Length: 478
Ligand code: ATP
Ligand code: MN
Image (tube, rainbow, N blue to C red):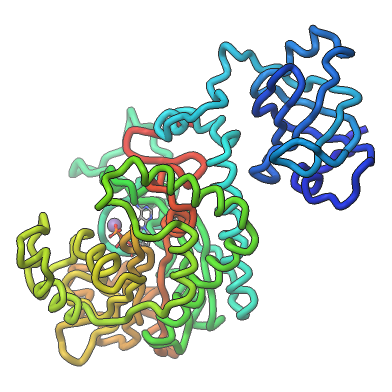
């Protein structure tokens, strides 16, 4: 009999005095009588009551934290505090023992660093159970949002010969024998002999291929893994992360901002509705964590309030130029409180500047547009001022940049001219330029870093804690 009822369903059951089978892992066992059992369907445990006087002591000994159990018994209304129902066990089967001396996850508070080193087992904690259920809902909601609007989910290649941004932070893909790499007469690596007959790498963005799809299917999105060999050991960067990249023909920058704002609100609302318990738990977790910080560093809102606030307010939209003026006039700049003084027009904003705008000045998500062309990619549409491009970055509290996007340059001559100025080989991107040669049209899109979204919704502080097995410099364990 393998029939089992999920713990989430049992806890919501309107019926009692029924026979049930429940399976899960022991979170705690106290007084030789009360097992807290969890199967990951919810953060809440079901209490299993053991008739210890009539249970084999050898079996009782094997009910340890981390052990996998199958329990047959009766679901009854609970008289105890903290739960409405519980299971009175008739029969307990130990499916898998867990040596309490060796099992790393004890029923106490572990540091997030310790749990990262035990990422294979951290799913069994309340915090990580909640994070990965929320992550799942967000991923599903992304698809639902686009599917409801008639977008086509396009799979762009993971292996590519182009480096979309020209930033050079790519991982090479090769099947050369690394001890014996073929060289040309002039001593260079002979990629002609490599698997693909040319140098290839893991993708840093699906955008360029996404644009090709949009120029026929009109509304597409990608949702796939992305790789960047950036050596930035930050709490916001991973070497392998998931990116969502919609691309829409006939959209301009305003449409693009509307789409991004609608999408973010939709998926956050979905998680709030679907994962109310988990977000409640994560809200308490964050509030506890904040208590360890000095008063002036604590956030004014709880996680739940932050999420609701984000849903109930329009994102603030302003140009990069306006933002620079605000920053120059800001108190921290005048009092020289920024680590990096605001340099003036033309330079990229530091994350402390972005956070000032979002967290202190506007106190809500901000969309900055029309950045100087020098600090943005070649494919962004050039404005008539000759200095700025139709870029947009969405900045979120506690996160900084969560979305980067733009209206694309659809004019062949302007695009080629910019590529030449920036030293981007037009011959290699012949296929990209073909869309501008044949039936070009205005279009726009953006990239949302999925883990940064999960960071925001879970209130976690480190991006390594919102992906099951994080990849970062000097780490590829699991
Ligand atoms: P940042 O300035 O934060 O490094 P970026 O300008 O390199 O971001 P884009 O190239 O515009 O970012 O990528 C689009 C989105 O992908 C970003 O807005 C961000 O949400 C996400 N992203 C970029 N790099 C990473 C990374 N290394 N790890 C996780 N997410 C990332
Ligand atoms: Mn970057």
